[in-house]
Image (cartoon, rainbow, N blue to C red; front, top):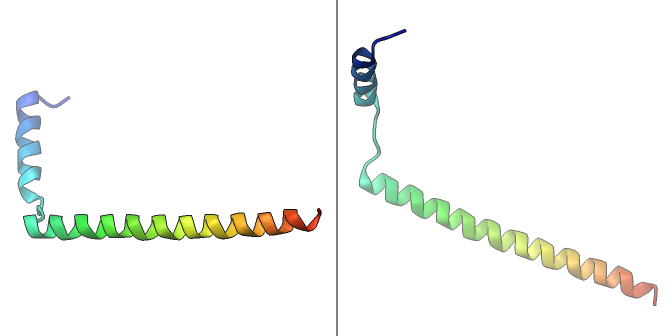
Length: 63
């Protein structure tokens, strides 16, 4: 078992190796994620609407 002080030193050493994104990169990535959420939402709403129309049409054939 490692001693806690040594563990904290190792964690800090590893954290300095991390390449952190810039503010600009973070904003661009966030914008792209939000855009993809909107696109996916529109896609799934459209597919749901089309399936609803299809099922309604098939169900109305039996009347």
